[in-house]
Image (cartoon, rainbow, N blue to C red; front, side, top):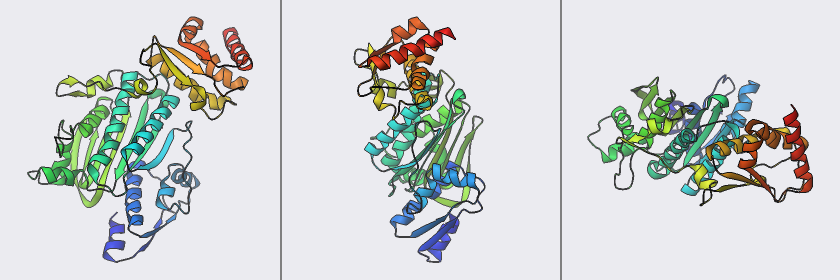
Length: 388
């Protein structure tokens, strides 16, 4: 960032080449601030070229995360957002509608790749994602909006990391504009993670940074903010802040969350001494008003029904919804699907049947608009699973 400032603002160049050829490692909390700044430069008519890493593994990382596309879109296509990948690439959003659509896509991905999670702990992750990404729209005045990237680490242990970065005024500047008694950027960041602290208490509650830090801390994760001339880091439940010699124009928040703790939401979001239980995505997206059934239109959750690979995220998602919504029946609608592969039938319905047992499966799952051929394939998969 300092080199870019010197090259463009001090020396006056309008054409810049970012040379990553010798890069041997890269992480979202370091790359997203660079990508946000580059987007701001592009908007100011600064031409930015990109030299990718020579190391093939790191070069693929730049492509799959979307960093290469954000830095130089003419040389790199947008990455695929495959639901079976554990890496959700960096995506730019500018409005509340774009943010909402992006979060829905992310939460669907998490439902499909992380098995056996606790619903209230999952709601804590959803809350943190929403609050931090929403801050960009509400407070940052970022000309390029925000960037959001998410990675899943070790799905069985329920660990994720997300990074949000913008090119706006920065947490320190926005908070100090309303709180002139806060003298330094370091003090501003320390204040920003306290409950109820906001630049405008009339319109905003000011619990987003505080609550997200607590979610990370309670789960034994990590949390950091970079803004202005300061950085704040929470690691091993200790919060520290420091001065940064090179100022960052904008804000970057990085959250590493372990949500294997069943009571994560209750322990972390006891705001003003009261437990906070927000409405969660599963309730909004899946549950019916009568809480008796949940509609699951299969064609909306997979682009293919031809392989075991395509069936894995569907099976994981169905298992998570069944566990999260005990006592409700999942109605799997096969409308528009006339045939599926035997391996898909076994991966989704055969394995679910074996894991849940015949009685609970019949109580929890109902198939509708299913053709005789598909029904026969599913029945055969379940029968074979009983014989194993």
